[in-house]
Length: 149
Image (cartoon, rainbow, N blue to C red; front, top):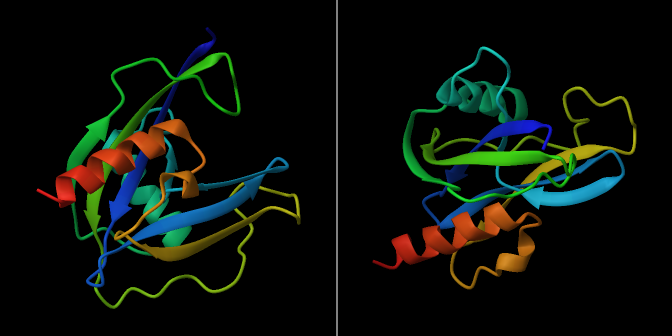
């Protein structure tokens, strides 16, 4: 194992009971995930979450509360030798938030075929397979169970 890859994602649910997803393409791979991303060196988990929301969505986080992290081994889809440690937070953003328009080139990408776009998906009838990565699917299962309590 080469190392640990720390990541943080925000679970944002709007007033219409929809969850915010990010459709992306990087390095020739298309995937759907929650907004968020990697934790930089010398950066805290919550600092990374706030930075990712500003970078990806142009939005500040109004509040966040810890929801879930994986306490089991999961290798990275992009660097198989890395072990993922992923933190998920329930996040509130402004109610008048508008999705970014168009297919923005992801930060740090120079490939014109790469993109990053966002969409709202209803929680009711949510299909896990919409999410690409196993840890996101696990977090979503827990979120749906939590929401139905």
